[in-house]
Image (cartoon, rainbow, N blue to C red; front, side, top):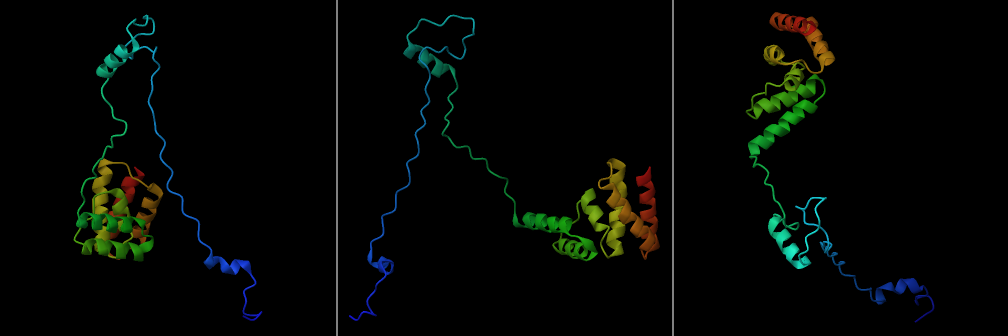
Length: 189
């Protein structure tokens, strides 16, 4: 072997060295529940003297008196089963509520309708629908909001008034303009 072909760097021979074995997982610590032998039973009052029975007999009585609680027992709480259509509805509704601007709101609302769902009668959803580009949807949302405001206080009042003012000034349909103006008067009172 020539001098140039011979390895001079000892680190380059790492493939020849055996790798150290992996350590196993550390064992879990054991938890021991203990009670002092001279302690009073849970039912004893602070002013009462301690019973003179031997400690094992008191421990047996205390164990029978107290309900058995296995601290290691797992409690599994089942989540309600949700079908695929409900998951899709929730997803599309979240998409609608997270959308910003008329174009996104319109796309999200159309996807929700295309999924075969009816818009819920909630103020947040109906308030988003006021940004829809289709005035028929906006007019429907105004009708639902009129009913909702009779039952509950308005949410996001500045945004609500701003959207109603925009509809009152710029809507093409006279019915939409009049409903927006009427609803805006209701908000002021």
